[in-house]
Length: 205
Image 1 (tube, rainbow, N blue to C red):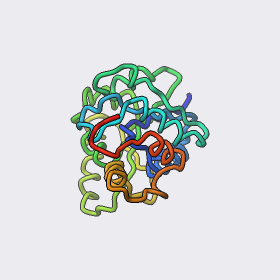
Image 2: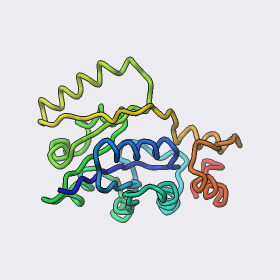
Image 3: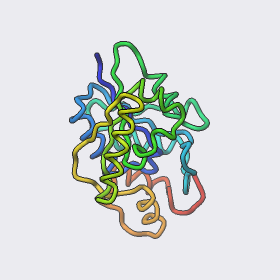
């Protein structure tokens, strides 16, 4: 049984927090392969200061190029339209595969509001990672995990890692304001953004 991880997102841009989460996910879930999948259009939010899907895909390839076992996939970009997790799980599922889906805290708490949540829980094992230090969410997380177990018969597991408090929106704001972002992005991604003049205004490129 091949253990496959799925890590989706807009990745605009992919930063060191994404890298840290991917590595912890692979190690703690004993993954044989991790799919990093940039969305075409996220169903849950509008893309602020959008850049093209081609740019986001290339930045992901640069960001994860040195991580063994990671495959950056364009499947959701090729599919086009809104990117629904259940469609990706259907495409990747198989009798010889066990799928693990990585979520941030906010996404994990709303899994039952996604398209076809019953099928999502049937096709994969959701896993979450904390990217915050907000203790007020602890009780809510415990309640939600118990709710999912009772409703869908699956335990949502946690990746134990020190939170890397970074967000793509803060990085975009810093670039637009001319503030340094060194140490927050993989160097190859930082060079790519500079070379292609990305995020310097609210107009997508």
